[in-house]
Picture 1: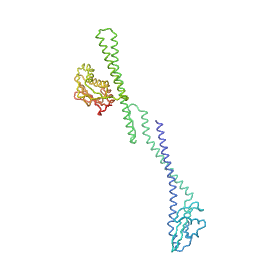
Picture 2: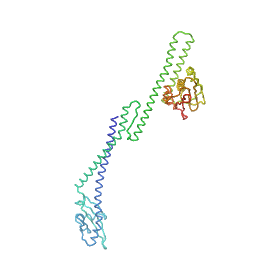
Picture 3: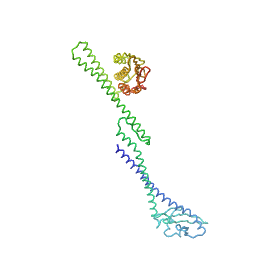
Picture 4: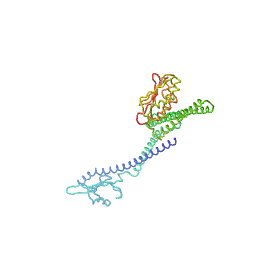
Length: 420
């Protein structure tokens, strides 16, 4: 991860450095072009501004050529043009620009005409460009200054980009290091001055880490529960099998066979529940809704009746509806057996009421209730942790709450009419 972070820093630095170099080159070329344009534009405007003065002088009788300055000469007669400038007469009227490589030296030319009396006279202004423009040495000096400033800006920009890149990458490095060194439920953190996106990233990582930790705990608890539930009937079968090897009266042998059959049935129900959950999680089949009737609930109550009788606890069933549910009979049995066993273990006597309506199933006991440390389902033991895990698989919601006389465990059906 560290190599990747360094590579990313280097790539960003090269990328932004390339952009900075391109911008610097564009600025340099643009500066040179603007200087050339400004220089030529100033010379053209000079000729435009001095042309009226030359015309006035010619109208007042000045002879051609007329020297207006050390660099500008005016003509109003083509015959007075030097031999090398005769080609100027071929230029169109209104021409105002610099000519390169046409004459021995570069010159600016303004070609116009004016009327004086009834005659029309040409007006030609010639400026020696080499005397008014910057020399090659001056251009070299200016280019060096512009290049130096551009390189300085490039260096400053590159330094700023490097610092910015390191600052942007710092939270990623911090998260990467925390991922490598993370232990247990340690939370991911970034500095307070990190951008909102990195804070959102750490929040998401912490959220998923918490979900994964809870999932692992649920799966471990589920494995322990399944192991315990399977070990109990196996122990019964092994013990009863050894007793069957001994000689005894027929009634005794019948009881042992009944114990074996009952234990095998319990194992089959646990296995069916596990297979149903595996198929549902892998999406191999979509659980079809089925009706939860009184007969199924009575059979579940019959299984815990002996344990309740030992503590003189009465079991009562209130069936206000016949809801449609997704869990199989084996899964529902696992849910209800855990809720009922928990209620019986938390009670010394009294009554346990099981209620069913369209919204869910609830089990109310008259036991000790929840303590302050039992504000989560896991606080009531491994069985209720299994209940919570099973409910999540079917999008049910499991809740525990204290009542004046004990505790109420509720299984809330999904709000949507579609089952998972």
